[in-house]
Length: 343
Image 1 (cartoon, helix red, strand yellow):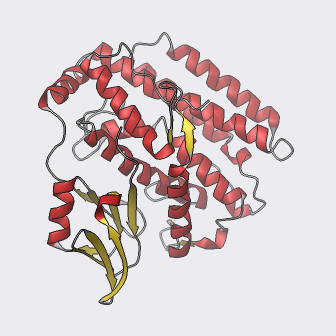
Image 2 (cartoon, rainbow, N blue to C red):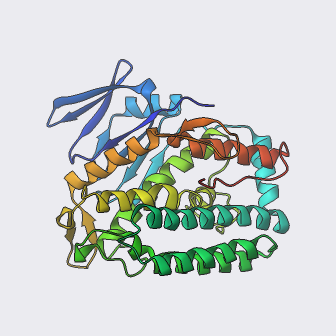
Image 3 (tube, helix red, strand yellow):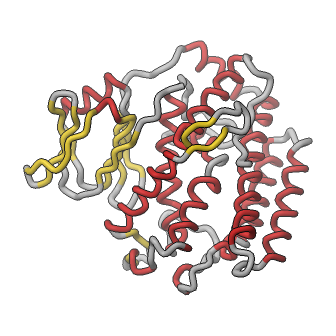
């Protein structure tokens, strides 16, 4: 198991990152602001107008620290990483499996079961935590429908029908997602999922958190020697990390959705923490973005027991464990891939 490391988020526009000794140094207007030992990092994410020195790039490539560039508003732009990790035998096995229709369907089904199972538990937690503030009838009915989707998946081996059940479950879940929001602010109402760009505050938070999760999961897959572009549930597309998008399905509601709900319901994020552009796109302000990033890092440091391996670990290690389990399944070391389902 790899040691739990941190991601450095650089959000200040005009920041410059360089390497001095064994540290990453951040300067703004040529003034040093912070110095961080590089051995403590497993990733650097730069938002907007942030630049890095070639020496820092070189060191990160050699030591396996992934450097990702996003737009100021969280849209993925590019990623820098060193030599491909892992061995060719594992990746060849992954590609063969991806070309096997039945095996691909089995893995796609596992990812969707994890997604729906965690979505169902998220609704149950909302009902448990706020019984007097939510519509219990709606939430219980949605949980019942999601349980039915999982039951149908158990005997399904057709990829397109699996994707169809996933879409059906997502609609059930997001149709009642607004019930989980207890903030009285009318600007924090949720009427449905939208993105590219997000057109309301809830979707803005969700899209931002999904981007962070995708970065972390992609790094975890790379660290285990898997190709993040060769997926099973999501179809191959140039430039798309399909396998990372497969695995994020297990963690969307458990990490991103619940964190977004907590920040809103506890009043840590307010409706005036957003701006609306002329095109209608909703954008998170700088201070609120820092609040969200801090909460995300703190969430990753919390410990839970992994439901399959029965070991306590930081939440930020869960996708590393899932990547390891997936690699073991692809190599034939275990009979099935166990999706992460929150207990």
